[in-house]
Length: 178
Image (cartoon, rainbow, N blue to C red; front, top):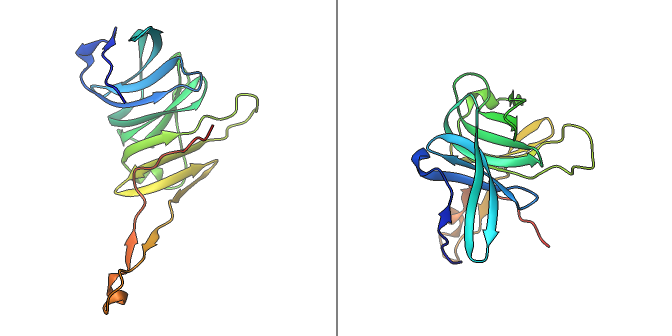
């Protein structure tokens, strides 16, 4: 794609290290300078601008990832000060909640992606993936499980059996087909 200069972003925050587009396509969640925030996206011709930037408290140190879990809620991942490395917060800055699942407290999240829940359903369904300690994990509902390890096929040679290697899943993402 083409690089586009974005105006209206408070550059004093520092470099942007994570970004996620809202399900409505009109807002973004981002991490810049170790601070999570939400901004409205405005497109005017070829000019892209961000308006109404609002910082979000996370209670985390070393923020690494952000993603939309619902139309009004984001997940933020990083190094916990205490407790879980994964938190949920509403876009208005209220409702900061640690995501307590399995052995999350012992992890430091380095990458995060979330899949927004259907707004027409009620409940607390959570669908996200993250990387911690060089391993990908799937969060679905109340469970946190490592992403499956693939076994790479050996190359054709006389020592083929020695060429089999386990491939650890990292850098998780959701593919959305249209």
